[in-house]
Amino acid sequence: MLAGKLFDAAGEPMSPTTSRGKSGRSCRYYVSTSLQQGREVGADRLTRLPAVAIERLITGSLARWHPEECDPQSMLSTVRLEASGIAVELSVSRSKLLASRLAVDEELVIGDAQICSIHLPLVLPMRGGKRQITATRRCGTSLDPTLIAALRKAHATLDRDRGRPILTEAPISPYDRRILRLAFLAPDLQRDILAGRQSASLNLENLMAREIPLVWSDQRKSLGWP
Image (cartoon, rainbow, N blue to C red; front, side):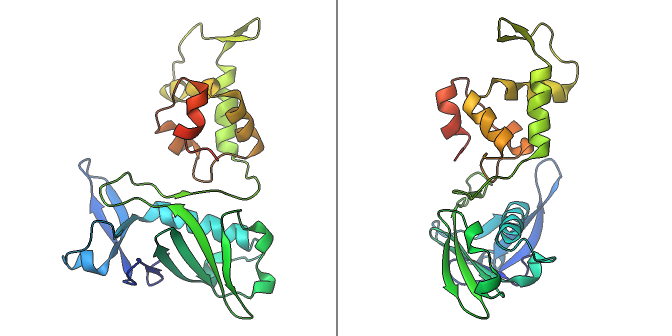
């Protein structure tokens, strides 16, 4: 998706590549030219990104900014990494871009008859860090049917005693045992899920892979909730 369009902070192209982890699973990345050629780069310079994460983020942003476009990827010109996030350059007029769909932290840097550039603030991983790319904030709401269904299924597993949740028997299914934790999220976080106000990157798979603190007051910060 981003071949020939993604550039790091030094202006070098980031090309798609694959590697195999210890489990033998193949993973896709975008890697800077210097790293591919074995040249030295500074530790503070991001030269490798997980492909699935950055592609999902860009695809979601394009659909939000210009929902009327049948093929949002066709308007994508370049994506450049910056110290505070990324700059997304679009081949679309400002009049067709729904600026009202920009999140609070996003900024329309350039807007004319032919092209727009949007600054998208992100938390980007450094080399050796956790492989995650997280939007700092998002605009509006977006219901996640899979996450909502899992939350409701988790509650259906529990019995009630004077309004308090009770688990009389552990679920047989490993999947049901995993999602049971959702029923013990802080009430305000559960309301956010039902209203579509969860973090932009927080889907069911991502949430289940994280450690969820037992203390409600610690959950929002730990899970990167907006």
